Length: 130
Image 1: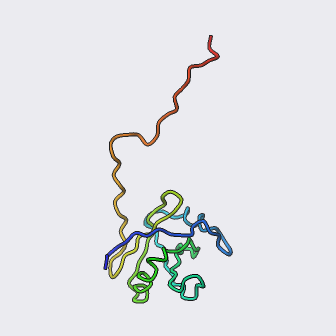
Image 2: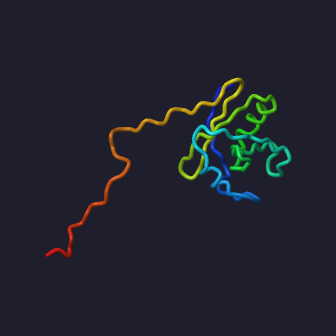
Image 3: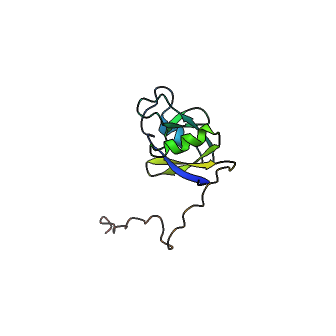
């Protein structure tokens, strides 16, 4: 069993039935904030579904269906803890620890080379100057 895994939160762009949007709840979180995982055995789409909630109780989405049975099995044993890992692209990620471990954020990826993250636009010569 891995001690910790990172999983995406799927369904972030779907609306919640009431209250704030899932995307808004994700945008309020900082890396390392605790999140709550809730099994949804009555979910009509997937009896193994595991929803991801902010600490304020706002649903942010689900863990991927392929990983839900594995995580759900450990949730039944009470040995799952999760934190918000961060946003990337259009999605978000959580970090899950199993057993007695607390989830730890992985180190940020190293940047290759010394290339800047952005380049200024070329400034054209002033056509109006005389």
